[in-house]
Amino acid sequence: MPQQQAGQAHSVDIDEYNSTAVALPELPLHELFTAQAGRTPDAVALLCGEVELTYRQLDVSSDRFAHRLVAAGVRPGDRVGLFLDRSVAYVVAMLGVLKAGGVYVPLDARQPGERLGWMLRDTGAVLLVTDRREGGTEFAGDLPVVRVDAEIVAGDGESASLALSVAPDQAAYVMYTSGSSGTPKGVV
Image 1: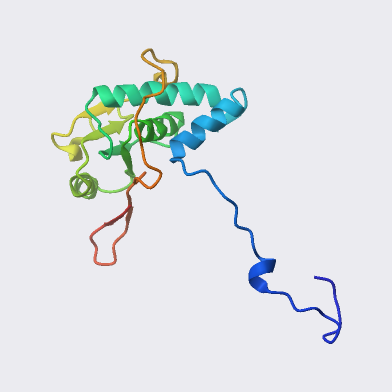
Image 2 (image 1 turned 90 degrees about the vertical axis):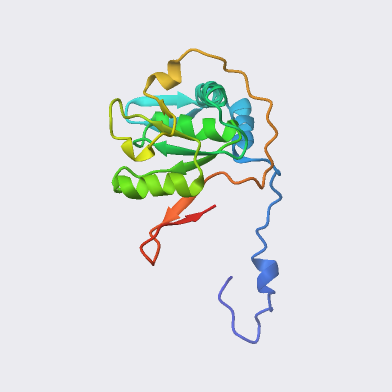
């Protein structure tokens, strides 16, 4: 607003001045991503170190992984633990869980195994996705484990979109806070 003397200034309704509301499509995150992939398929969507994926590549890879999750028993609303380092595989897995209708539960490898196991049990996770080759997932107990690596991007398998109906208000993830009582609290 330009500098004016108080007597010359026009009053402005702060709500009107700050009206920045925009109508957004009522779609879940993974469908918004797929729509963007359709608009800009060859644009870079993900850059991680030396690895670069276009929207098309990320969309196809996450569709392929969603099929793998469904084949492993993941159903809409199921919680899926993600125990991966920050990587291309992490993003593909996260989108794949959403495309399978699941809810991802990020697990931090810096946390003690006992805490991670508790979080999996607390959410009722049906599966653990990890990039650990051998060991390191004992905290998961008898939970089925799907191992992934860089091949998640170039792998074989069905890559068509799943025909699942996911409501925009369905949970996408469960994040855990530190918990002031010492017990982690899951936030959906």
